[in-house]
Image (cartoon, rainbow, N blue to C red; front, side):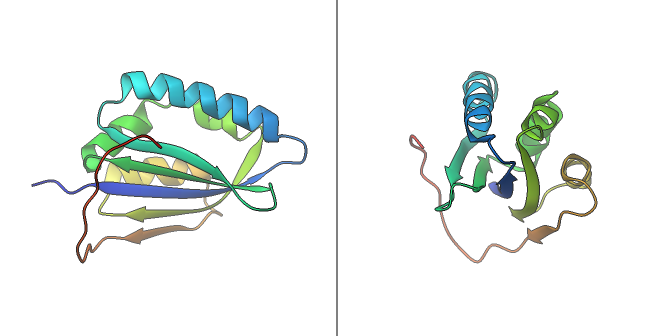
Length: 128
């Protein structure tokens, strides 16, 4: 049975770009909620200093994650007008195509860490 997969992206906001980021992210989430039924969670959290954002996404399985990333269109480029990627962590086993998409999106200087082996756990859906 396919396992859920989670991606956490740390991002640093560019000076004065918080409201631009908020607006772009809210629009993307609204669009994705309607068009990505296998994306179980897509939520962003502002750090205590207001300069970093952590984006958390959970997917039904690795194939769902790949479909989500392939359908992003210009969203990553639009997002990078207001932030820079700091790091990406993936919990679960992405397929090779998905891993390549992630690395292409964040660039070669951003560390991407894979935590492939799940010890135990569960996820129950609900509002973020």
